[in-house]
Length: 278
Picture 1 (cartoon, rainbow, N blue to C red):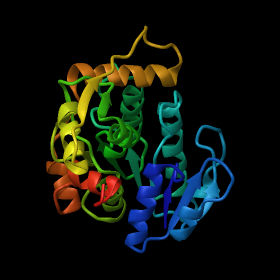
Picture 2 (tube, one colour):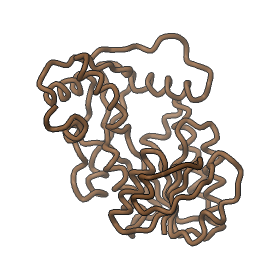
Picture 3 (cartoon, rainbow, N blue to C red):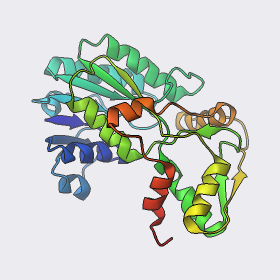
Picture 4 (cartoon, rainbow, N blue to C red):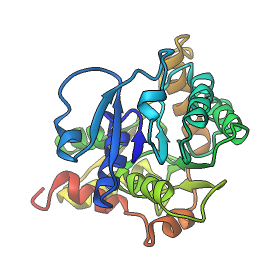
C-alpha cells in the first residue's frame, strides 16, 4: 500500500490515477473533510490529515510500503514540515519515501525552490530509503490562459516572450511518480522530469493557433509594482521574474528513461484540452 499526500490536488490525483492503473492500493491523504468522488472512483482509501499541522502520522503511515510526499504549494513551512514527516516515515517503518520536489531547487532566488532544496537535504540524512522527482512546470498550468486565447486571439505571457519553458504533462508526472514508487533499482536517485521541447510564449501561441485554425498572438504582460511581501505572492512573483530572465527548461532524457517513451508534447496536450473539433 502506498500513501500519497495532498491527494486532493491535481498532482496527487494524477499520482493516485497512475498507481491505480498498476493495481496498487493507495491511501490518499487530503487536508479537509468532504466528498472526494474522483479519488473514491479510483479505489483509493481517503484519509484526512493536514500536512501543515503538528499531528501524529503513525496511523496514516501504518502498513505503508511507500510514501509519496507532495507538500502544498507555496507553503513557508515546507522545509521543516517535510523533514518532520521524513522522520515520521522512518519511525513508522515505511519502506520507501519519494519526495515531490521541483526542477532546479538550488535556484534560491525563488523561496519555494529553496524550501525544496532544504527538504531534499533533510531527506538525504533522514534514515529512510529515498528517491526524488523534480518536475518542470506543468503543461496544465497554462490551460486557463489557453482557453482565454482561443476566445480573444491573444495568449498572455507573464514570463516574457524570449525565454522558454519545458512544460511537462501532468499525466507524465503521475506515471513517473508511479515508477519511482514501485520499481526497483532507483534508490538514492534524483530524477528531473521535463517536457520534450523548450517553448517560448510565441511558439505556444503558434501551437494554439494550429490547434484552433485561426491566428493567436503572444502578448507580454509585465508584472507591475514591487515584489510582494506575503510568502505566497512573493514566491509567485520571484518565480515569474526568474522565468522571464532565465527561462525554465530541462532535458527530456530522464523523463524518456523513466516513462519508457518520450514525454508527451504540448501539441498532444492541446489536442486533449481543446478537442478534435476545436
